[in-house]
Length: 385
Ligand SMILES: Cc1cc2nc3c(=O)[nH]c(=O)nc-3n(C[C@H](O)[C@H](O)[C@H](O)COP(=O)(O)OP(=O)(O)OC[C@H]3O[C@@H](n4cnc5c(N)ncnc54)[C@H](O)[C@@H]3O)c2cc1C
Image (cartoon, rainbow, N blue to C red):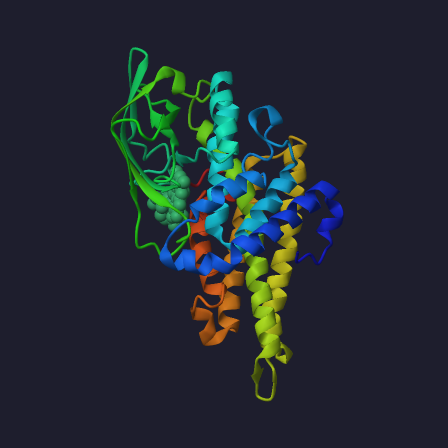
């Protein structure tokens, strides 16, 4: 792993072993094929059971729910290794863990946890998380038109969700809707419920190796026992996003390592004006920036993981790490693409794929500017949303 400041020395042997196992597996079974999957616009569903076997699904959850009880850094390192291959692979795992298993774990009843978490951990069931709607994602409460109307022991859901990762692969959807009092409620909705439709979003130029869908809900009837009983108000889905952003803060550094190493190898081999590009100051400056951003980002991610395990994590800390690391990874991918010259625009190299993927990561899970406003509010006490 690219690790100038020896962050690996700060990890436990178990955390190091988990990262190494993830890298070995992904280099053998995902990296050689990722360009083809990305170009074809498909998510490699055959990897889901393998992800489960390797413990990528629910690793931090307690064993009684199918987890392995590993540390947050171990989970972060899994995200890192997945995104070193492709942001789409990391997105699949982020959604399954942070946006499906976490809300069931945190807001579900004991019966819901026992019914769903082990199946999700074994990869026998895939989930998705529907918060964003067509009118806009940055203001999820203001733009939420999806409604849940209660009829006795049943809730009737109507509305549309947009940009939902894993939507048309999923067997269950965690859906957020306003009740008749305007309170946001969460529901576990089997996707074969009558009135539920998932439509694939096509022609994406980013995150092509990830399934993205529109969800259409027409009188979808959900029994009360599938409502998440402890979720009340927008803070419930927002807390899931905090979990997912934690994984992103780690994951994007994997993408940054990938593009850095690719550009570094290229400039050592390629000659211009009689010497390797690596000997040119302007070329070195770009690599120096990338190395510095990766180093800063890894220290931030490591500290964030330890704060999380100590129960001291605050959403603003996660906002800062998601914002900085994603922004730097995106800039790094642009620099790597530039260093590769014309070759950098083809899928033969990884830089352009990571660059295009990172445009999504820059926007989802709170856009860069939304996190800027979170930090601005922290600095000034003024809400500028
Ligand atoms: C590939 C992909 C996968 C996704 N997966 C999921 C998923 O699984 N589940 C889910 O629920 N959502 C998902 N999303 C949605 C994602 O979270 C939203 O795209 C994101 O929240 C931004 O919402 P929006 O696209 O509607 O943009 P908008 O909210 O309309 O924002 C448009 C622009 O306005 C800016 N802006 C907004 N408010 C302000 C403000 N107050 N001040 C200044 N600027 C502002 C934004 O920064 C942005 O640049 C996914 C998105 C993508 C692209």
